[in-house]
Length: 325
Image (cartoon, rainbow, N blue to C red; front, top):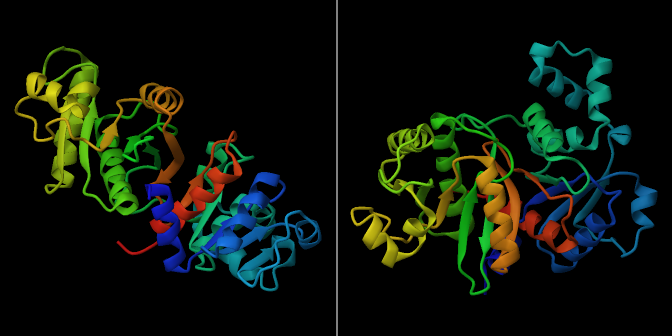
């Protein structure tokens, strides 16, 4: 059993509820049908009941709710909440109502008000729109400095690893990079059940090159170690020094990782995004993500090129991330 199948089984035991707001997308409907057939979680689909009920495949299930903002019997609690959340914007009632007409905002409000455990969107909307909806409604976790992302990479041999950040923060400073790494470690541990071994990647290994970008990575390692003194983490490391034990023994003999990292922290979005796509296309890895992290509750993003199977996997990830631990 690979990690994707394991996540599905774990999700089914948690009895979670996930909101899918982009029901105009046929891939979302197909994913919902597969999830309901597998009985892996409850779903809330945001949209018009007639159009969704008339979709193929059939979505009849007692684990399904179809809801829309315009048909909410008690809209005041959502309006009150959104005005409270965005107090600095001094929203009028009409402005809050207009915002909640956006399915992404409405989905986030359902999660924030404990009517759902997580939301998954992004097959139609941009990553920026999904993040904005999550921040407006759910908010950033007190232990995180920012919202970032990971990709769960599963190689053909079943080996899994976590790449971060590949989708959100273009050029993090050292403090942000440390926060991203710690959040990625938490995400990796929750999803895989294994303790993170974190490598901060660079074009340099332990001083083999001198550059301000290398200094930034070193500073991030120091900061991350101050935030978590239990996990094994090291940097700056080139990828081969972090992943191949034989090379680690030559290039970084004093590294605690010894070429056995499972969380890879890329110094910027260019490197992370390029790396995950190369791993996916050339190594045949299954890439699940971008998995947004750093919010109080899960609001996961999707690639607009995703398949129904990708959406299904993201829902199961959201269930597990919403669980204890």
